[in-house]
Figure 1 (cartoon, one colour):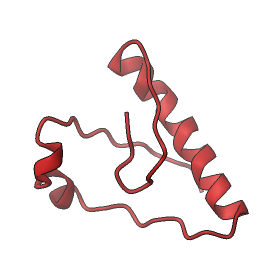
Figure 2: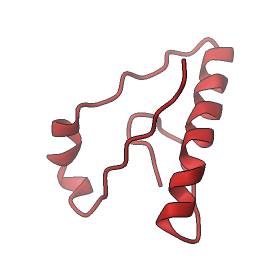
Figure 3: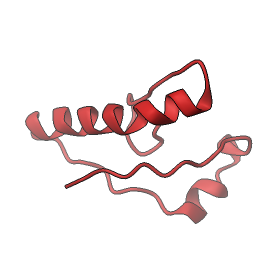
Figure 4: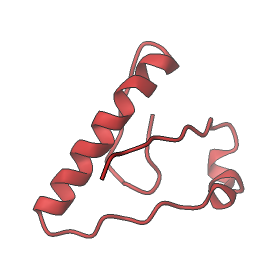
Amino acid sequence: MEFPDVPGCATVGRTVDEARAMAAGALAGHIAILESDGETVPVPSSVETLKDDPNRKDAVLIFVDLLP
């Protein structure tokens, strides 16, 4: 699983459910590193932008909630 708005952030699993379960932790950790390095945290793309991206035509969109 990759996060198109956060280059370099990804997670894997033997199944989609396993990867989904690990997604919030991977994203939270990556964002924490960006913040500690003083880098800008990217603004999420809209669903419309992602679904219309020809490079992601076979992708499955999964929402990941993060607590502030």
